[in-house]
Image (cartoon, rainbow, N blue to C red; front, side):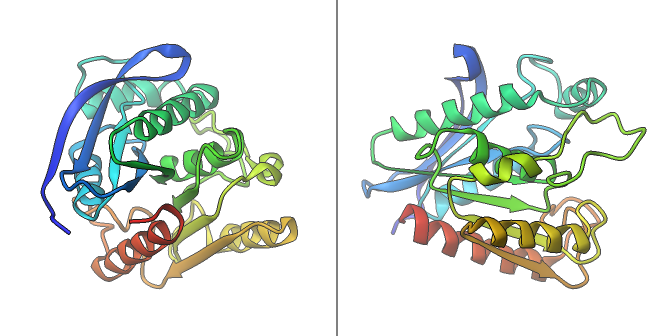
Length: 250
């Protein structure tokens, strides 16, 4: 497989038919491939997230990251856009789900698509990945990855600016296999919350795999932050590629 890719900023349809900015990367070989919607974290549509999009393309997947803050702060830096949206409690869940669904449709419409699409998110994006897999119609997503998504079972603590709400009541609607990657030193979500989520999914008969890493806290995938843990991140990437290879094809 060639690792030649094309990566670019483009405009794609979002929720409600809005045109939003997105970062899109795809392999240049002609093989049929699955697609991945990358949901950026709360710090925003930044260089680190775009690097993840390119990493998926190098490894054989078409990938797109919609700029969830584009409507709120077009043209702003990732830090400024994030601060603006954070002060308003985050991205509305309904709009987020619409943007992910539209991004999945965008990937399926690309030449070379095999018709299968997954979603992945880190931090707030991890919760958004689970939300999308619950709220989008069955068949929209074929696999979902939650990397240390906070507030899946519980709402944020009192005093938080986030308007995120528990997804507990939505879990029966989870429509595709789920991979969860967590740090045992994390507080949001804590190991106890991850264990409780695991019990909930078992009771519901859902298909999922969870793995938690010793010595890793929140944001252990973030190569530009002190929280980065190279061994956990490297193993996590391999688990992600294997999971998507199984459910999306390669």
